[in-house]
Image (cartoon, rainbow, N blue to C red; front, side, top):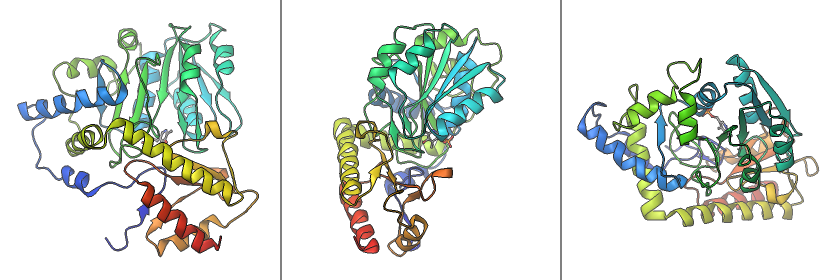
Length: 360
Ligand SMILES: *Cc1c(COP(=O)(O)O)cnc(C)c1O
């Protein structure tokens, strides 16, 4: 473990030892009473986390599997993919790769998707499905989902698919209130668990609509998810070690830390990192501070121009790792994640070490 670098990258994030140990629980059969009990412990806590009374499926795949599944189940006519970064753009590629008729509405990276953009597109009546990434991990831009929901709520025939991969369990997302149809997140970001499992809340309306999907495939069929869910089970053999860890982590999040405390901790860390960056002469890559992510900060490096690759090399000595910019944004930006079970003490320690390395 001495070579372990503490991860301040936006996924995978650091996993607490208790959760790593939970994964080492002896295996149980997935068609047993013990499994049913495990499933029934997880389910109400997922519902509390997402403010929903409906099912929250646990799917043994990375998030993109369920992102693909959501458009296959819910787009019967044409899909509009809103994009302002790498992950949202990739969802468009995924939609196309499924042979689904779709359009891309892309804005400059660093900018947010705004209510008027959604209104412009949905009011055409062309679309019965939209995809939206709540927290663009490539740019550190957070969409203002409550404002956006006021628009899509006026278009009940449009299925709203939301990628909340780097936001869920780090900020409050009220599934039912927001009128979202599918809300997706993998484990390796704010949940603070290893990658390999995805959770998704699906609305009643979306479950109904998925019945008529023509080519939803086998693995991500929402009807199959529902049928198994009603028996506290999954259609195929699940990633049981991940479910043990998810159960332990949800118990910790809800009963030990508390949801409000967890969300407040993320917001406080975000504020501290944003202040630090601005104070050192950087700006935030997000167009305005109100769009800056609560779970990671993407810092614009085009004026100060530190050598990000070198900084990360230097951080190795301190057993820590941050993230360079995504793709073409390498060296133009860098990203510090403040998600999952990272604390303000950890973040202040990291920033102190960065100051020391850079001589700020
Ligand atoms: C990390 C991330 C993903 C990637 O999901 P995987 O399929 O688990 O690789 C998708 N969307 C966003 C916004 C992410 O941050």
